[in-house]
Image (tube, rainbow, N blue to C red; front, side):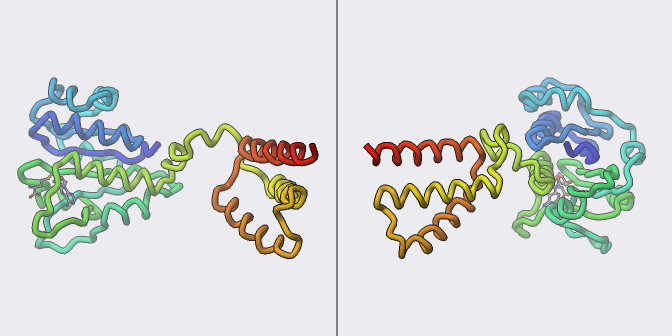
Length: 241
Ligand code: SAH
C-alpha cells in the first residue's frame, strides 16, 4: 500500500468530488485522505460517488488548516494546473512517482489538491516543496479534481509495481519454472519432435532456439509446464502405438 502518500483536498466545494476522489484512491490501492475545511462533509453525495470506497471516506481526517494537515509530512507537493508567476521547482505526476513511489525510506508525502473553482492560493503553494503538474492540453489544462487525483494515484500505483500483482491473473499460485525445469522441458520437447518425425536433426538447432525464445517471452509457471509435458508424453505414447 502507498500508505505514506496522503491525499489532501483543500476547501472542496462539491461533496460529490470528495466521494469520487475516495473511489479514485481506492482503485489505486490508496486510503489516506485528508480534508481541509470541506464545504460539506460528511454528505450523501460524497457517499454516493464513493460507490464502495466509503471506507476511505469514513477514515478521512478533517483539518482546520493546510498547515495542520501536512504537519507530519516530510515532502509536500501542490498540484496545480496553472503556470505560476513565481518560479517553483516542479515535477510531473510521473516524475513524482519515479522519485518517491519506490522510495524505501517511506517519508510521509502530501499530495495537495486545490479548490474546484480557484485551485491553490499562493500562500498555500509556499508550503509546498514542489508543484505537481499533470501534462495536458495547454489550452485547456484544468482537470476535474477527482480526475487529477486519479491520474496522480495511477502513476504512483504503476510505478510502485503493484499492478504486476493483479495483472498476472491466476499466476502467483504456482511458482515460475526454474531454469533446470525449463532445460528438462526443452530436452523433452526436442526428443518428442524427433520421435514423431517433425524435427529433422539438421534443423533442430535453429528451431529449438526459436522455441526457447518463444517460451522465454511467456515465462511459464510450474503448472503450465506440467501441462505441456503431459502433452509431450501423450504424443510420444500415441506415436509409439
Ligand atoms: N480552476 C482551478 C483548477 C481547479 S481543478 C485553477 O485555476 O487552478 C482542482 C484541482 O485539481 C487543482 O487545484 C489542482 O490541484 C488539480 N488539477 C487540475 N488540473 C491539474 C493539472 N493539469 N495538473 C495538476 N493538478 C491539476
